[in-house]
Image: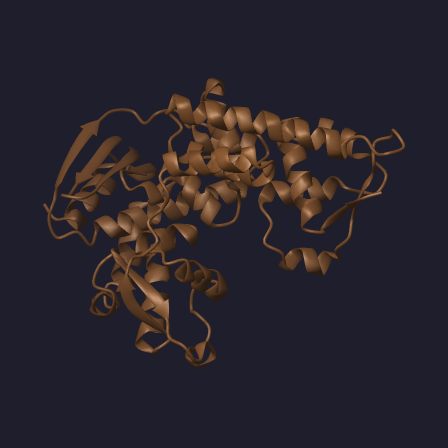
Length: 361
């Protein structure tokens, strides 16, 4: 069967169960509920939900690590992120829809592989539910189909990276047709990332990213090169976290430890380093921020206007905590009544203070 025939059968027969696609390099799994797709997973690390949410700017490494560490609470990661207040429900739903849509569209491009269908009732939804109609994806894929050969003529595979061409005029190619932020995309390009990492950095929008990259290459803004920025391993992140901790750079140490943990959450040694550095960082912040020189708890005030805040790249949790700052409640009270753990709220407020968005008075 072709993938199109298979998916049309899934929708027409309104089947429920688990549909697995296997190729030489990748496995995709889709959960079906009466002919619609309600969940997907992939063996490609850059397609994990946490990476998509982080790439879209909804969550940072620390908030992601906190929710992943709370595995005792049970339930899927997305539900825990919403429960912790780290991600807004509408942001999670949008990320899930993107993840399912792009995974289905990619499978439709496969020329060979195998599939397996295991019928059965769909699991009860946990938290935010996203439903994607197969017919909608088939129609979208058909609209994209004429463009894909042109993209692949320019970008032959996903192992490709890019380099800016000096003196090229980005304004000459006009604005993207899709919601792609050229500045964010080019910043990721400058880090030497390959296609897969670039897609993750832009929230999982695979087609839109590849289409924009192809436009930039064809216009002489970018040129192809071999991927030069291999992601650091968890062990490398841990080593850097330990080095920074010894130097007293607790904020950067916690970021490195969180990156290691989100990459390898099942590694006990990595988890232990993350929790130890998080405790040390929070203790350090509590000493510095919660009690002022006069013995009272300082009051935070926002030092940026609404229009300026709207233009800043802030995670969902940062915006939620900023909304609670009114110039009257002290920092200790705000931290204690935050929608997340007090330790996580304190780390976020520290970051806002360091960026000059919030000031303690």
